[in-house]
Image 1 (cartoon, rainbow, N blue to C red):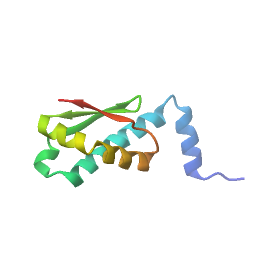
Image 2: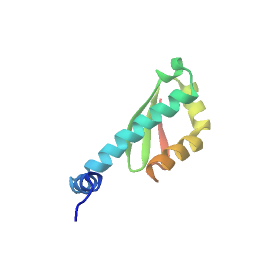
Image 3: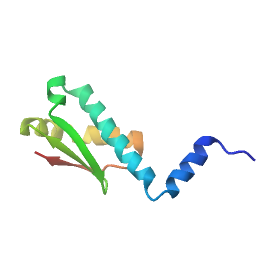
Length: 97
């Protein structure tokens, strides 16, 4: 007879023209930042920024090509961590140097 608030909100968000996918994209970008914070020193963190998620591709900006290469080496682990948390939402990273 009664529905939980979470179920009502999830249903409402799915009906609101892609709002749920936009929220998921923002959460994926935020989680990427947390993964970077856990793996690289603070100095490196200021040079890496998740930009957006579109068509299962997470665009990431780098101020250093060396850091881009380091992230490339860890790409599989990063994608695995993101997809474990959010489902299969990211297939690859796009490197913007």
